[in-house]
Length: 65
Length: 323
Ligand code: SF4
Ligand SMILES: [Zn+2]
Ligand SMILES: [Zn+2]
Image (tube, rainbow over all chains, first blue to last red; front, top):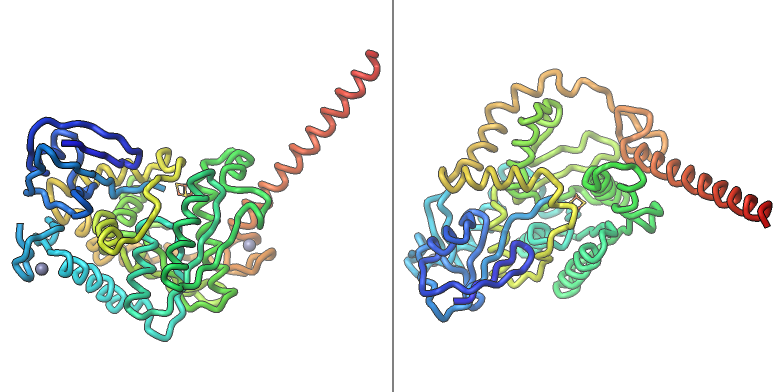
């Protein structure tokens, strides 16, 4: 799957196979309390499965200043 | 995961409330929380004119959106800080939002008003940009609200902002700041307008989700100075605690406000307020912090200009003598 991370700088990575959102975040070392996970414009809960062909967007919800 | 209200598929889970919601029920949850906070803390009512500080980020735009939806009379104020691309984009987002919804937006341009933007101010004073920026934003928001006859100033500070400030104040034992930290700062008379934070019981993640679900186009980019700010470090630390212990942030803040803060009030605010001789805003000194800062900045800029002029005159003179 393609994973687009906006933290807030945009970067794109490829992840092999399918994963539960919760596991995907753990692998990427992202705190589920600090991000929103989006697929095709819809929010995903942590128990959802991100499939191999998906494009997943991870949006950081934390801002500084 | 299922919505705890209707059993449909959930799109947002909230471990701190041990719940999950579908889209319509999430939006309702969010608005109910805001309405409850406004009522419980007597922030404002339908007759009040509210000025929302609008940066163009998710929190301020969500706040403006939710207040307008609830039928409050809320206008926006955007302060153009002049921090490169970030500020231009922020202004664009705020302007677009207000135009699309037919809401009134006022703007103040810092550089036009004071001859210096946040970046130049910070260079001139050799001070971290956030200190001059924060002070200017607070001051201008209050001044505009007062001069335009608004009853209340509302800002988009959320649970993460408030807990990060609380943690910072505790780490440095800023007793005076701790005594004043509150979701409602009443007007102490004169030119000080009442200040409220209707989103202070909602997390940044919840505000971001609200903005997203309502199709609010906000600025995702960060202010380039934010990375230097300590608040990100504090937020990160708190987010780790929250992940292990859901609800920790909210308990940290509400118990502070209920149990600890009342004990700090006594004697903490023993200084007398008077009018700033330059602008009339309440202050404990002769000049308020804002006027003091800008006076110092313009004095330094003037001094530098004179220095440069004499230096170049000297150079021209030496060049003339040599030829
Ligand atoms: S991060 Fe600092 S400089 Fe940037 S907008 Fe916030 S307070 Fe101002
Ligand atoms: Zn539901
Ligand atoms: Zn003043």
